[in-house]
Length: 121
Image (cartoon, rainbow, N blue to C red):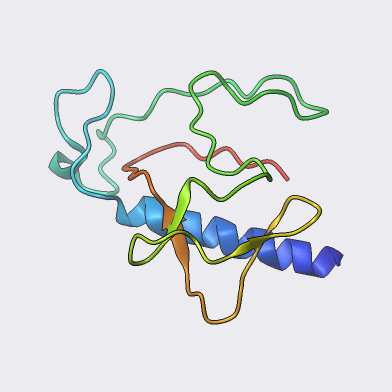
């Protein structure tokens, strides 16, 4: 059970990472007049996103005020398959996502450019 949870987490993190890396069109960062397409990926002068304060360590608390919660363990409403249809994965009884055979990958409905990713498990 523990190995399954680790594999599931890693596959979701990898999927989210790929989605975030790929981006969904041109985005503009806060307080920055240029779009992210005006900067090279490893340009040292590229502006950084603002740092989110995750709060104190310990028992998970509420998400940061500026967070976009993509999965809270209760539904897959923020996710879709590669064709824009509802995600075919299922929720387990312990609040995790589980891949359903032959349903393919999932992605977030919202598009993201550069971002900070805060993951709790």
